Length: 370
Image (cartoon, rainbow, N blue to C red; front, side, top):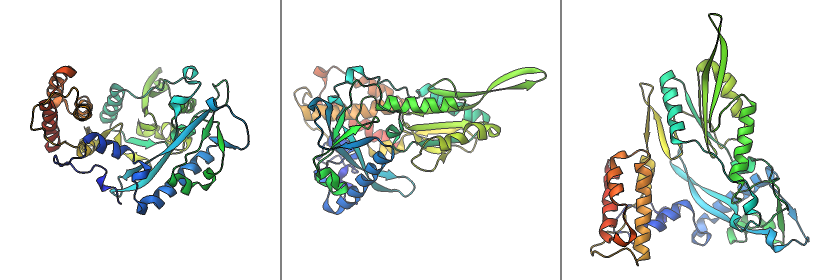
């Protein structure tokens, strides 16, 4: 794979800014993709387009007059996706429209609840207390599985991507063609909500209650009295689910979920990454949470020898914001030991200097070695 330069190095002497290296991990500009890797990404875009067609997300419109306000440009996001089972990477392509240009933006329902930290901890504690199995799965092309896009006053359209790789993967896009969008797609502001609506509707129809930490309550007789207890818990974070149930209730609660949606791969059990946390079941039945996989990818920047103010220096200020953002995420998730350092680094923009940027690098090094 010809993308090792996309930010794997943690060398402080590397002149590539941290912000650029972090961005390259999220997405590869198509012009930077080496020719040797182009076939892999062309195949990836073919696979992505097949998903769009399978879920009937759009239909071709040729020769029809459409108002320019209703036509949204689109592009393809390319990246290398880690494959945990092999330790390697695979080419990934995602078609996304420019949703910020949506003429109906103020009219769309866009809120989409996700599992809170307390909700996640409740599931983990319940599973540890009752010694149950903990399952994880992620929905494949989740937004394309969402409810139809039926809350608009008029139809909207997509102009397909035109970069070299996308045209290689889908030759039809070379034509002067538009696509009427039928279902919410990636980039659409209401896509997360429409997916959540479908997910909630399906799981509630199967007996789950109380989003976004869904519970399954069962009632039975004990000593002639009705007893009602929680026998299963389910959490959803966008397209990621975490579910657990008492052994005698897995067939009624967990198994129906396996066929209710299309999943991205085999369900994982007891050891997996959920919402940025690595969850590992311990021999005593408890769970350990860590972010070693994330820490490994966060890079330090070149040390600043001269003390200079960050205000007025966009490059250094961008590096500071990138670094402090990473540390805030860690401190509030799995690393409370750095909370004091992170708090002290929260200063007025006028007071920030290159010494503060160097301090961020010191904390990052500490996090990496601990």
